[in-house]
Amino acid sequence: MRFVIRCLFLIALATGWVSSTIADEHEAIPTVHGLALYDEPALSEGFDHFPYVNPAAPKGGSLTRAAVGSSFDSTNPFIIRGTPAIGIGEIYDTLLVENVDEPFSVYGLLAEGMRLDPDRFWIEFDLRPEARFHDGEPVTAEDVVFSFNLLVEEGNPFYRGYYADVESVEALERHTVRFEFATNHSRELPLIVGQLPILPKHYWQEHDFSAPTLARHPGSGPYRLAEVEPGRRIVYERVPDYWGAELPVNRGRHNIDRLIYDYYRDRDIAWEAFKAGVMDYRTDARAATWAIGYDFPAYNDGLVKRITVPDGQPSRMQAFVFNLREDKFQDVRVREALNLTFDFPWLNANLFYDSYSQTESYFQNSEMAAEGLPTEPELALLEPHRDALPERVFDSALPIDHPTDLRERLRLAYELLLEAGYEVRDGVLVDGDRGHPLSVEVMLFDSGLERVVQPMLRNMSRLGIQGSLRIVDINQYLNRLRSFDFEIITGQFPQSNNPGNEQREFWTSDFAESPQSRNLMGLKDPVVDELVERLIRADSRRELNTAARALDRVLRWNFITIPHYHSGETRIAVWDKFGYPEPFPEYGFDLSAWWVDIEREDEINRRLRRR
Image 1: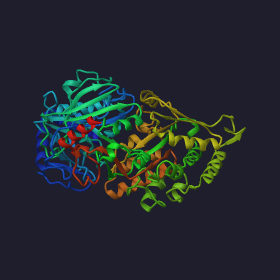
Image 2: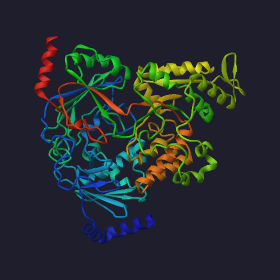
Image 3: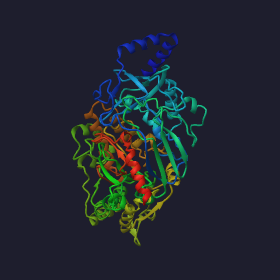
Image 4: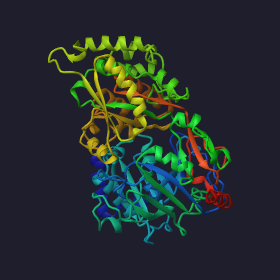
């Protein structure tokens, strides 16, 4: 039916009838300033600024952070090839921007207004005529069409999945663009297309988009590229005549003149650089450092402060990820046994100062996490797949009741491995049929997790498993990921309060063999594919929660990862030269709302010079 409608639309376009039809639609459907996923946006039309910013924040100063990794070789973050520079998103504007003080509401940035089809088969955006790229060229509807097609056809596989239900994009007028959708199953899709980064057609049609580049190409955002030094640093400078500086969505934001990322190969060296005042800001992911590391002169003198920001989103799932493309990981009993070698209680007591909780759910710390036995609405989604799912999905409660005592955990792991056909010969666990040893390699690009990996490998050796750790540089790491040349790696699966189309790239079969997709493990499971689609098509908060819980339940009982741990907060250390509004936004953290106290910055610099 949609194909027929589309054909009629093209015929009508040729005859001129469609122009009057669209004009009628414009009159019938109101143009709005913002969209919310389920309800109405909290901020009314004509709002002055986001509630969590200081609209009178001063401009100026600099913010220096560390980028831990060997280097970068591209300022194009949208493609598979190359290692992109960190922070490059600062130079791009999108059609809409999120208010992180709401669960999921968006407001116009490049778009000054939008019209959404009541049946959700299309959305139109009216672009701001004053919007400009950094080289002075106007942002038009043709740039939007070009950007969408370029990203889907030549960009990272993520975009193909994220925008899979967009049927077409058309420039109706110079400053009006329409997105047509193949289905109206995803309530999130109209908001998702608003997140599209808009690239300058006049620039990229003259350059090879698919190749890594170090060019300072133009965007339309609040910052532009200032210094590009691979292996050392990348610097972004605030655009003094930024076209959108006084928009309500930007007022009080993007206050700092220079955003600097210095590259370090080792996080310990980066930590020393922070203590010496070479860097201004760091996110402290090490529990030991946070607990006992802040005993140095600058901190004791009050020049450095620590800030704890509660997480308003589900806790990020970080985990060791199995490459399911490997035969040895095909048996769920093997994967469960390897899970049991991860001794979180020991790690928490001996390495983490009891500051973490173990991550169990892919939607941890949210109402989307599965608990107990399946509810009736969950069972309605799961029952059609009973023959394809482990019985434990239906009759065993979550969280999974594994022993906490290490001896008991290893005993259970050993029993599972015996059931999977392994046996011990001369102290080595081997495949009972072929006599091949069970060996696993964990690959990292950062030595920071080595102290987490080594205890797990020791526990594996007690079972006769031959475990090893390989640490490689970031470029080799990325190349091996692209060719699926790994056994176990570390992966992260961040979730928002409103998961949607991105779940396809995390879990579905279409992305299992796509280089650099976020389906790192190569998961191919028709049940998971179906549950992801049910989640995307959820038409209410209740339906979304039910689909997420059913999906969570299936993923957890399949043991596709070895989950790590979380704290439920973000720990930040800064040299005390910044101002920021409090309280922080409820559903996220927006560093663009910070500013530099120039007098305080000068005082810190004077004291550092006197040392």
